[in-house]
Figure 1 (spheres, rainbow, N blue to C red):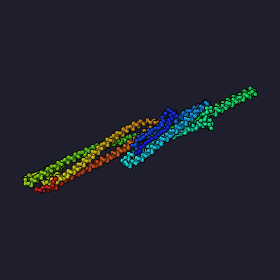
Figure 2: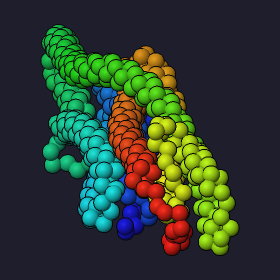
Figure 3: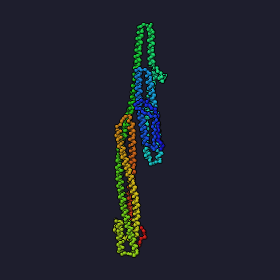
Figure 4: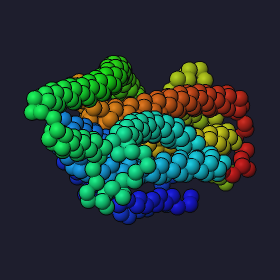
Length: 587
């Protein structure tokens, strides 16, 4: 497999100075080059790395959301300050400077948001690259399937697990995209507010005026101040004109004019005050309307989050109940398998003891047959010596020969077969009869030796099989102990998960824990299925061994019956030859 190297560089300017909030995030210029090893096809390390990276991205998105909310609060506060400044009638230079500062900060925030967008795009590209790498690894694993047919089942299981993990990653990517769209919406709302501020500035300044030129000019004033100054100049000029005209008119007319002017001034002041109050009330009403809209949107978002949290809690409860049922079934299956293993161990021990007993009986029978063959050989030698003596002329009395001929076959037949009847005793003094019996006994002895060798081989095989089965049983017991420990851990974790925190920050790690538990339960289920298959294979093996042993016992019994028949036929079929004959067959 080629090297799976994941190299990504995130270039960002340090925005801690621009983002003035409590959770200062240290942005790094060039970061994180992770080199993965070569031997990993579908490793757990890569999945853990991806999960940790996704959690980091989620935390970063949360921090960015907090910063956006804080900046929105600051913008609202600054808007309130500008409104209070307009209400109090401060000079427009301070208001213009503050508005320019706000526009600068808004631009900086827009730049920061664009940087964050570029970062999110880079992360999306990185995730797509990882998905392509996973697909390439799948193609390579499919190619490797043709070379290693024995590992198909394990690889298929790994592919399924990787597909599930890819689905989880895709879901998490979708969540990050949803959050990105939310940030885009907030950016659009900020842009709309900035446009409104620009419209207000242009309404006060004029559309053909540049803000940069106004910043350079120190003595610039707004329309309202210019109108107010012109009105003051007009009043001064009118007062001068009245002074010039007053020389011609009487003092009464002057007083009347002054009274009229004062009344007009008071009316104008009242009108201006009422207009200012109306403007202030309109501004306050607009602020309240905005706050109401924001609160409504916030309430909708919170309601949606509550519904999502309720659905998650219900799904978690269902999963918990399902996990409880699975754990109970797994415990029951483990108990059943342990009982079956114990029964099989006892059966194997009993069968081994039976086989050993049969082997000892066979060995005893063989030893008895060998002793009988040795006795027959000795008697044959004695008979040949007697025949030589008879040929040479040293013939004893006929009655002694007859007594020997009668007693020796009786002893031979009594030693050979205890179950034979007393009427089967014959005068078997000829050596040919003993030679035939010896040959038959040797042939049967060879057959019995072959059978013993075959039985010894089978016994060795059975012992090896029993050793292997005992080793497998030990391994299975160890595995079952490990599985019980895992089940206990899962139960403890399940008891800890009962108290679920519905907060926004603690949702995602709990969902990740639930997905990890589901993966562990699936692994346990697969292991249990493998153990059941191994138990079935062991059952079939035991059945075959029992059948072979039954066939061996049947053949051994047939051989013994054939040997007995041959001995009986040999004893009955051979007649008495004359005394002077001698056998030419050599044993």
